[in-house]
Image 1 (cartoon, rainbow, N blue to C red):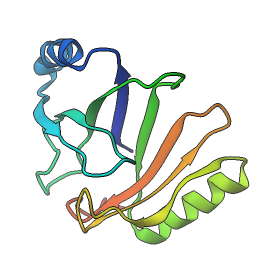
Image 2: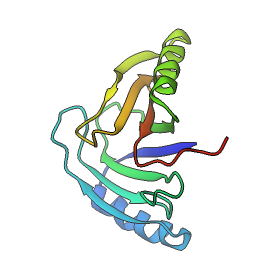
Image 3: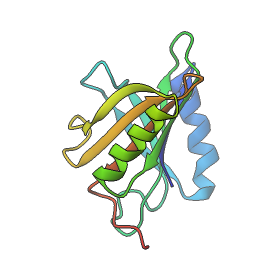
Length: 140
């Protein structure tokens, strides 16, 4: 399941106006701005689906970020049910030829219950394996 996607854009204000209009019929809403306190995470502008943060189902979010020179543009967050799954996916991605982009650990700048690991694929696209305390347990 997809947890979140970062979309790199040339103009955040223009892109935000587009996504507000395009996603509203699907029940998505603005989360607003996330002002980063670390160099690793950029400033972001977000949107979320109906389930996001509800505690009833795992939600999905889309975050706009300012595109950097030479960036591929894709950052995909994938849901893991446990920290052990995050660790296993990270190890498997490295074994498959991926490169480390952030070792498994708590990302307290988002939330103390946010545990993730980051890798880049063979073309430089970025993947995050993440489990969050706000996500309910998925049915088996």
